[in-house]
Amino acid sequence: MLIIRNSQFNALQDGKDDALAVDLAASFAGRYPERGLVDKALIAAAREGIARARSYGLDRYADISSYVDFHLLIGPRFDTHPPINAILADPDIPVEIRIGTLIEQVPPAEWRAAAMIENEPTEIEEHPGRARA
Picture 1: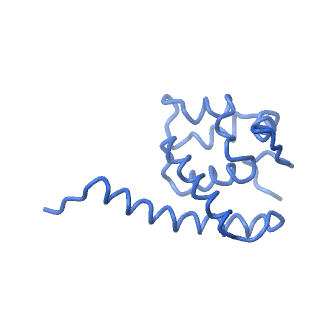
Picture 2: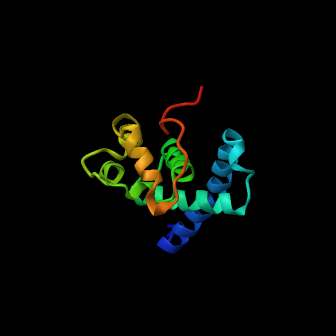
């Protein structure tokens, strides 16, 4: 019988998350070239976003990718804004629909308010959940 300890499993997950951070940073840089090229800082920010996404129970690629986009576009603490945090942390909202619920229920003014956290405003041209034309 093969026994995998928690520390071993966590190390495997960390390796996967490192690769995921590189992938998401490259994807982000490709979609938002005005924000700069992929570099260590962008990869580190993506890695932080992945960790924060996982802290809310998000584990599907699409959900983590969307969360990281919000993290990079709006700000690393966007999830602390009360209307956003209420959805992400609500145990009554299934994890699989939390990102969709954010996109559907959080109005643009609240996304702009989330971008102001830490007094570092981020320009938001459109609702973050809407695809660019």
